[in-house]
Amino acid sequence: MSDKVRVRFAPSPTGPLHIGGVRTALYNYLFAKKHGGTFILRIEDTDQVRYVEGAEKYIQEALHWFGLHYDEGPEIGGEYGPYRQSERKNLYSKYAEQLINSGHAYYAFDSEEELDAMREREKAKGNHSPKYDHAIRQSMKNSLTLSPEETQQYLDKGENITVRLLIPTDEKITFEDQVRGEVTFSSNELDDKVIIKKDGMPTYHLANIVDDHSMAITHVIRGEEWLSSTAHHVLMYRFFEWSPPKFAHLPLILKPSGKGKLSKRDGAKFGFPVFPLQWDATEESYLGFREFGFMPEAVLNFLVLLGWNPGDDQEMFDLKTMADLFSLERIVKSGARFDFEKAKWFNQQYIMKASSRDVLPVVKAKFAAEGYVDLDDDFFVAAINLLNERVELLDEFFLKGRFLIETPTEYDQKTFNKKWDNANSQHFAAIYDGLESIAEWKEENISHSVKDYIQSNDLKFGAILPIIRILISGTMKGPDLFPSLELLGKERVLQRWNAGLVTLLANNETSE
Ligand code: GLU
Image 1 (tube, rainbow, N blue to C red):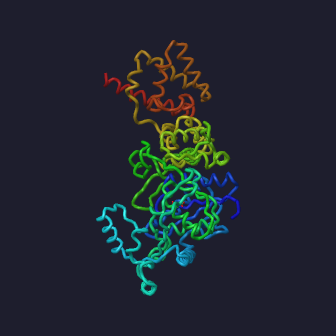
Image 2 (spheres, rainbow, N blue to C red):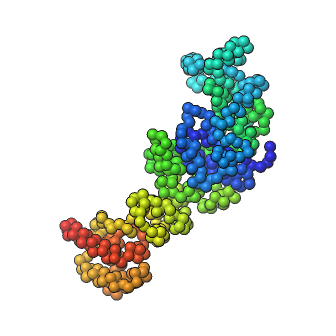
Image 3 (spheres, rainbow, N blue to C red):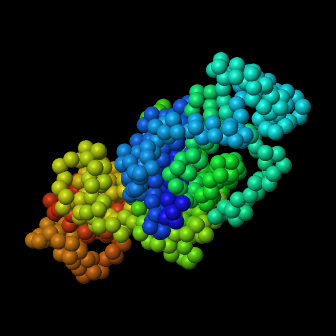
């Protein structure tokens, strides 16, 4: 095996890719980049029952959105292809045969009913998690208990044929995990896993290690849920006399409470995304981080810290920096809590850092989706510059910027009532006249005109500016006042001023 790092992201296309899967892909990608290695996408689609149409495309689109480009994979190919297990299926049976011939695997012919009956029998004896293992296999219908002739008869009949691994008894299986250190399993805890199913397809276990070996994978970096399978995998490497790759098992991503694994139900429950992109290929549909208004760079930055840290306080990294700093030694063992507020904080940082041109396409698309199609790019650039320190999610450019094109229909009457003083009416009229007479409608001129008036008449900013804000935008929440006024244009400001005052004063009187 060459020393060149080769890692793979090996998702099963059984639904939308969970955000934990994206983190696995990211860590593999970073590890490959750090070592000048190769990052591979392999689609593990041997389980026909769980296969979901559209899932592979989704996985590819998600990786693409994040810029996690793979060097080898379906569609793009590579020296070790094909990269979909369903297209490699002829490869696996010869390896299963090899294990049978070397005495490390055997045929089993038990029907579903017979397997169920075995489980019932065991439960009745007080064995609560019965499995097909060293204690049970002797009482089942397999090539270890049947004579060679009987075995041949079952093979000829062609029904219920599976191949199972023959797990040795009373052995310690030990391997070095790059994250957890030495991990040991007793072989007596392991079941005789099926490696070829009744439909002739390999199971995950066989296909996974045959492919890791034949694709010259050097490091297997995957989620903690695969840790216990690794004992089986290590045994299989031994049976084949192949040297195993190095293993690194990533910590779980936990619910916001820190209790238990983050699930798709948590997303629905707490109103945050757990998938990268929108999914609607099945009856279930979900919005993704993208549709929530996240920038892909921000999501990656958030994810890289769920289970890894650079060893100091640095928090913001682009992909290149992450790859430079990344190491398996700094991956933590304990689960990482999913904190949506932190995800939004990262997004806000990235929005502030981005140039208005970078976010323009997304913002423009959002306005267009809401029916605002005739706006030019200069408007968007100005609006983005005005709002970019106040938004956490890209959608908020629309929510907080709509007032720039849409006259308010609702007003913060309560604040208006609190701030309004009839004695100031004449001042508002004078400020209005001042604005009307501005020749060049620029932020500085608008701000001078208003502020000079306030100061020279001994008025309080707090008595005047909030009112102007409500007249123009309907609310107290919003971007800086004077640049907003410039962007709105003189005509619109004066018109909103008049219309707003009429409505607000009418409601002010009725409330008195
Ligand atoms: N197909 C497995 C999954 O869906 C891959 C596990 C592994 O990386 O070995 O996660």
